[in-house]
Image (cartoon, rainbow over all chains, first blue to last red; front, side):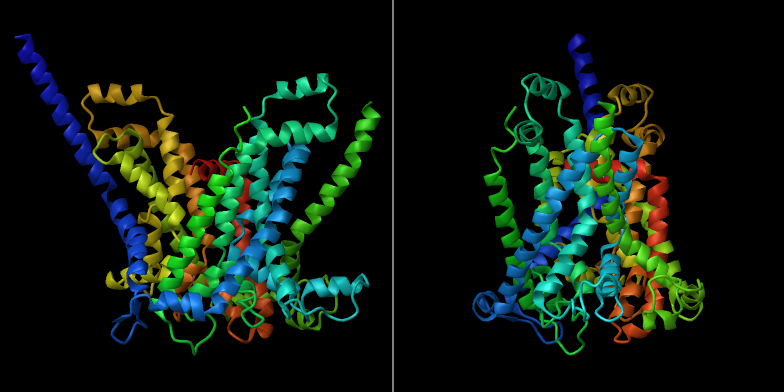
Length: 313
Length: 280
């Protein structure tokens, strides 16, 4: 009798479980279809077409490794754009991460004035990247832009600087614009990390008579390591993926020298700002695959190098 | 002691104020310039306008396409915000409470996809799909991609929040005979108000600010473009010098709504942006 009862209960349980599972699938179905269509499918699409010569109109032709060979041997511009991406990411890193960390340490605490500055420094984060591009383009415009006007007014330059006239100045403008947009969120990340540091460590350090600087290097920095690891990871991935800022701000000018890897590849898909170029979907897919691989290599290298970071406690 | 602290604080706040001035400057500059008339922008005579004029805004609104751009932005964002709230919280609930085969690998796959997704390079295949579904050439493609393409940040935000709701609540409802979906709809969903605020704000920010996706879907179709796309297209239209005034006014129109929302709902913004990113 008792055996029978238990069995009945468990089938009831099972049918409930099955009902739950079916409802789960139904509730999730629209999103799973969306995920399959807009994330998984594009991935396979790119991998597939990277083996073809395909411009969207004529019949695609299978050409094996030809697109990859072209990228590796006959397309120095791609590698220039990759190099430029690294230049921008490194320059941005040197400016942005220390600035964010410094502000986090200075503004950590519950004083009203600190939270005012925090809000203010965070505000560029919510401005559209494309709009940031427009604003900095207008500001640095050689003839009408306010930067040249102000520099002249203060007597720091005599003639207008053509900010978009050479690679280094244009890169500098890109870096400034992107630091302006990005440092606020990293500051907030660091503040969150700081607030997770137990206060008694600092009390111990005070008792030991540790100076301000070594308090920072020996206590704060190691305790922030695990936050820093995540922050830098997000920073690297997002900076390498930078595309719309460059497209809007310089569009690769002068002469394609400020192109970054994403904007360069993007232009093989969509003839951005140039009407005469023919899209080459096969080749651009190959470039996209190479870029994705480069990104994967960098991320796994980063994870490997920082494996032991943040294991201090 | 008090005096020394004060002396230390003064240079600190002077430095912070200088930095704050630098940070504010770009926005300030655009707002001020948008109030100049065209002639004084082009003559670049002085930084501040001699007379404030709303002329640029009136012209942008009436003569240029800005009325259409603004409306497009508004309906696109409103739809995306509503839809994303529903889909994100639903998938968060299913991944938090559901018991079904393949839950763990599915979640792992979605998380992993965030790292390999090549961002803007997916746009062309996405456009192709939209073409097959007859959704290209309008903002509905953008809306569908936003709502149904899984946003990993939102998913983790929602899952984390719902993980924090005590399971006893579900069990009580279960005893009363509620189904899995009923529990979600009548019990869990009403409990997620802070989550709705955060997810909604993030969706608003991302869709209002997005450029490349709506640009690709409205290529050569100015009547369907949202604000950001419309403004940028003025820059590349070749006559950018003559449309500076309109670009300034448009930029202010694109930035101010975000800033207003941000200042009034600051708390949700910061928590949403940070917790989502770190967990994801």
